[in-house]
Image 1: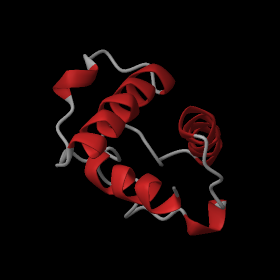
Image 2: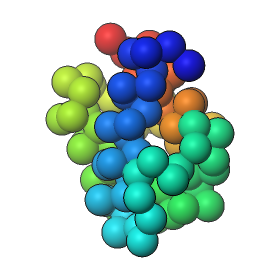
Image 3: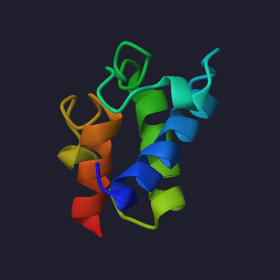
Length: 86
């Protein structure tokens, strides 16, 4: 992972742990770990709230129609998606 993706990944990990009240440390989530297994994307309301937090954190605009389970699959896939919006 490039340095920029690593920084994004760390921010995403913190958002995931905070938003979904996970009882793990952000650094315990690997870049390839399934975020869906952690609860991301399971509930449509929390997913929309998570997308809004991503928009605010990274200064991007995300069209909900562009968000698929594949994008929410891992920290890596989410980082790549956010980088594609910048």
